[in-house]
Each structure stands twice: as structure tokens, then as C-alpha cells.
Amino acid sequence: MGGALAALAGLARPNGIAVAAAVLAAAGLEVWRHRRRPGRITHRLWTGAALAPLGWAAYVLWVGHRAGDLFGGYFAVQRGWGSTFDLGRDAVRSVRHLLLRGDRLDVPSPC
Image (cartoon, rainbow, N blue to C red):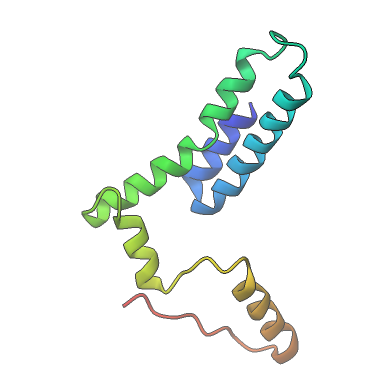
């Protein structure tokens, strides 16, 4: 069930990959906990772990298809928006700006 929900989260938003990572981490922990008792891990765990990142992958490929570059289109769109991976630094900056100044955020244009 968790893998299917993570796949749906990835289909809805690209940051759904965080949900897939949580499902994969939980699956990895379960495998580690049962490492001395082989055969106790059901196929449902493996199925959920396999399904979890598929929604995100489908989303990225769909955006890439729409952008004209199946494997690089999503990342080109992200670069156009000025989006980078900064471990949440920009989110903290934005929240701090809103709390301290109380005005609107300055969002960059994609063009």
C-alpha cells in the first residue's frame, strides 16, 4: 500500500520522491531487521519498494516528453525556473522573509 501511495505522490508532484525515499528506507530497515531469518520478507515489501519511485520517474519522463527531450527535459525546465537543490535553504529564506517582512515573495519568471 505504501509503495502505491508513494507512486501516486510522485505522479502528483516531483517532490513526491521524498515519500518514495521514506518507503524505500522503511523497506530497507525491514530487510535489515529480518536479515537473520530469510524467507520472512513477503513479496509485498519488494513490490512496494519497486512501485514507490515509479510515479516520480513517470512524472519526470512525461515532462521530458512534453519538453521534447525525454531524459533531460524535466531538468531543463527546472533550470529555466532557476530551481536548484539547496537542502531547503531557499525555503527557509522565504519563510524568514515572510515572517520578518510580511510582504509578498519575489518569484523568478521562467522565461
